[in-house]
Length: 346
Image (cartoon, rainbow, N blue to C red):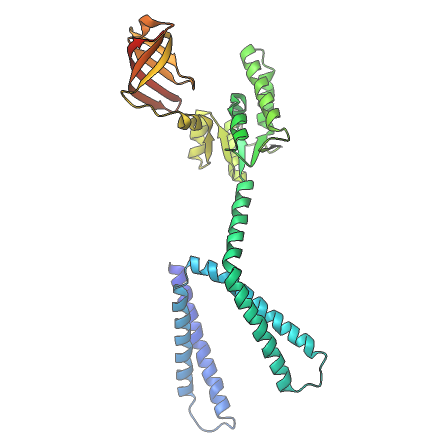
């Protein structure tokens, strides 16, 4: 990257300047009485050493990959802590020996730094990888626990979310905005019998998800974006705010959320993915319960609700027949299996 190259260049140049400065200092030390000698060679040698040192460090850092860094970082931290700990203990002990000689103090400090530094190296190299694995596990667990999912009204009314959560395939926290709950209550109070039944079923499902034995945490939030009116738009806005996913089986909300860059968990997509695969020329049994659109077609349904269109099955209404699969049509709304009549079973 350009920024990395620029930083390396600045670092090498800074090392060169520091080398020149150290060269001048070395010239002053070598000529304490100001003897008539040119400091230029000292500047050149110091600049060369400084520039070479900076270039060597920058080159060495290029070989440190992310994997190497993750392995060395805990060890380096342990080494630094060990050295500092040893230095601190040595100085604490020397406070009780104020009259000790300089050499004795130096030996004590070096000894403690050496001992604790070795302990830091040993512990860091031996347990550094385990520590890194522990931190990674904690981060993964934290990311999993803190996964938020916004629940749409259609999912609550649908009811399958309860079984999915009970199976453990969905975990974390389910956020139910107050406006979704109000919409659900409004449906439950509808004068239409069917809508009222759906609304009450949704409230029962929500209450079931809130029980103590539930494998998910349900939280009702009061956030309600006032600059948008539609429930779908509010959900998308909240999903962007909380970094959450949206649980829905609404086709239009699914498309809008994907356009806005929000991750959607569509219950219908999950159900379609779990349906057994059906191949052409495969035989199956189905009961024909109604007429199809074409003159000779009959229609039946599998246990999972998949529609089966039987060519030549209209005359066998109400009977269990054996059919042969001709083609399968997968749509966003579900799956349709087209078959031809084979024989009557019962």
